[in-house]
Structures are given as C-alpha cells and as structure tokens.
Length: 486
Ligand code: NAD
Image (cartoon, rainbow, N blue to C red; front, side, top):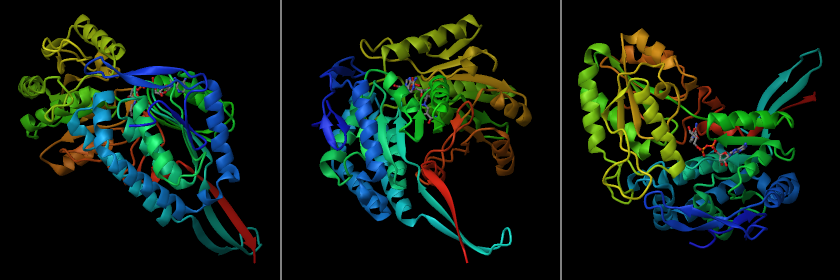
C-alpha cells in the first residue's frame, strides 16, 4: 500500500519535514516491516494550523452534515475496498490474530463509520424549546448543537483501527476537524487510513490530519496547544493524567479512555465450567491487550479448585501462536518492552506467594516474537499487585469470593472501573450484581455490549466521558442556547 511512509497534513501526504523515519516491527516475528514518517514538532504545528483553518471557515462545505455523511460513507467504502491489504497489514503490524480482524480489529470499526454518517444526518441539531416568559419577557428559545472545534485525537496500539476510527468517525460526523496522533508502535494502521482518505474521499484539506512520530511529545503538544478545542485520548491512566493536567492551562475539553482491571464474577448458581472457559478465552484474546478485558476471575470459594481447573484447561489449549493462523486467539504482545513488563508482573505474583495453574513465562515453542504463555495465577487475594494493576498481557488472576456482596466488594476494590462480567442462572440476581459494580460496561451471561450504538467508557481511573453511541458523538459537540424576544 502506498503512503505508509507519509503523514497527512492539510490534505497532502507528506514525508516528515526532517526527512526522518522510524521502523515498524512485526511483533510475531521481530522483523522490520518498513518505516513510517517520524513527524516533528513543526509537522504537528502545521497539522494543528491546517485543522484550525479548516474549522474556522477554510472548508465551508464541512458545515453541511449531509456532505460530512457522504464523505464518511466514502471513507467506509474505500476502506472496505482495501480490506484484504488492511487485514494483512493489521495482522503483521499489530500482531492481531486474524479472527479479530473480522470484528473489532478492522471490519467492525470500518463498518461503524456508517453509524457516524447516519448520526450526522439524523441528529436533532436544533431543538425548538418553544415560548416562555422567564423574567417577564416573552421569548422563543432553541437549543442548538454545534461542532466543538479542532479535536486532537491521541491513540494507543492495541486496537488501532477501532480506536482511531471511533474517534475520527464521530468527530468528523459532528463537524469537527481532527489531528490524529497514533501510537508509535502501530503507525501504519493510521497511515493507511490517511492515505485512503486523501486519495479516495472528498474530505476537504485540513479536515483530517494524521501525524505519526516516534516522539510522544507530539501528543503532549495536542493537549497544550490553545488552537485545539478537545483532546480525545485513549491510553494508559498515567498518560491520561498528564493529558488532563496539560489541558488545564488552555481549558480545553478532555475526553479520556484509560486502563482497566475488570472482574469476571461467577455466582454460585452459574454453569461454572462454561463461565470458566469463557473467562479464560476472554483473558487470552489478543494476548490480553484490551483495556476492557476481564482479568480478575472471582470464584465462589467452594468451587475454586473446579473453576481453576476448567479455566487452566482452556488457557493451556489457547497456546500463544502465529496471528496469521485462522484459529489463533492469543498472538504476541506488541513489543519486547511490553513482554518485559508482563514478565515483571509474573515475578511479582510468585514473590507475593502466588502460583501458576498454567503458563507463567515465554512459550518454549516460539523462538522469535514477543510471546507470553496464557497464564492463570492462583493463591493470591485482591490486594496482590497483579490483582490491582493493569498487566496488558494474557494473564488472569483467580480470586475466591464468599457470596454476591463479597464479589461486588472485591470487584469494586480497584482504582479502575471500565468493564466486567457476571454469570448466574438467576437473571434478577445477575442484574442486581451488575447494577452494583461501578464500571462503564458490564456483560451478563456472555452478553456483548460492544457496538456502534452503545456507549463505552470508564468510571473512576478508567476515564472521563464516553466513546461510541450518541454519547460518544456528543463528546464532539458544543451546546448553544438561543432566544429571540417575541
Ligand atoms: P500510552 O498511554 O503510553 O500511550 C498512548 C498514546 O499517548 C500514544 O499515542 C502516545 O504516544 C501518547 N502519549 C504519550 N505520552 C503523552 C503525553 N505526555 N501527552 C500526550 N500523549 C502522550 O498507552 P499505550 O502503552 O500506547 O497503550 C496501552 C494503554 O492504553 C493501556 O493502559 C490500556 O488500558 C489503555 N487503553 C485504554 C483503552 C480504553 O478505551 N479505555 C483502549 C485501549 C488501550
């Protein structure tokens, strides 16, 4: 695919102004796939300037929701026409198992651009509030929703298409202009979308800008620059805090999707072996590199051994392997740095008295690539480091509970509040637990909450605001009250 070594600034695909590039690596093989533009501060400045000018009247057609909807559908169709190339690129660069590219790693987020396009057309941009005489002056009132302005979108590497497009789609649908700063680990995911947008859609110059760089400071520029109105950030909680602090000076709106340490709760009336297998499958998916993945398995104390055995059996069957293979669920982690970090957590588990029911290190049969065995940790309680901190690897911690209230207590004993699951034969009991767990999403008995029209986001240290759904679209809107005397 052409354009992978370029950034998109003001409608043009350009090399970094310094001529610099940086490598992107296949995490399954450690081979260098190629290079991406190593954008500079001057490039980011030019991108912000282009987005500002396009928003402030430089792209007048962008004010028309029908035009924006047409451009978003063009982008969806263009991306779909390249789906074979994008799929291979995603598997190679992200280490995403092929299976997941048919859902959240590629096909779903591309399809979901259609939801954003539909919202641009169907949204009630102007609400007639009718007449009133609030202070004795008869007035006709309207509430008008307007695009919030220039959006700085900063994204991580784990689900790059999903996260890039779940920001770009709604922000563009809302009428904003965007500067996207992708993670340096997966530059081609964004560069490919940028090239297709530039070459195959009518999105006006400056409306969508993509600046790849090996320098994290370019993300910080988006959170400090007064020309940016909204920062839409997905990444670690530590970086999210910096983004929010940096954004304070220019009082920009901040939208944060951060980390998680979600609980999978099995109640004592559930089909425990089916629930255990699902929990194990989820923890191994994309090598556990999903912020909403349930990584603490809360088990009725009397069923602990039985559930651990079932979960361990599933996890050892889902051996970490080649993401190209159609049956792979657990591929590599993104980098040597991430693998080392996960190994540090595994060491901390044994140092704190934990044991491994399965896994616990690198798989013996993978000579190259950043692989970690699916690992089930037992013998620790919820205060252990591996139960409190986000590991971002295929690691599940089995923790006993003493009934529904205790399970809720343990689930909520976390700085995070992103997601969760509850399994029970009794729907009312499951619902009661679901309502008490303080998280932004929750699955009952395997229900799927992820879709274009459902909000996604976190309580507590998992974030502020919501992505996707109408709530996600409204993150990119301002609200104006207008009244005329009658
Ligand atoms: P990260 O926080 O290190 O980086 C995320 C992005 O922020 C990258 O583009 C990076 O270049 C940029 N960045 C780094 N320093 C910055 C700064 N000071 N100011 C602005 N931008 C800066 O995260 P990561 O390692 O790329 O991704 C993994 C983390 O992301 C995990 O903690 C995971 O839970 C989280 N995540 C959350 C969600 C969610 O929706 N809640 C989704 C995916 C990943």
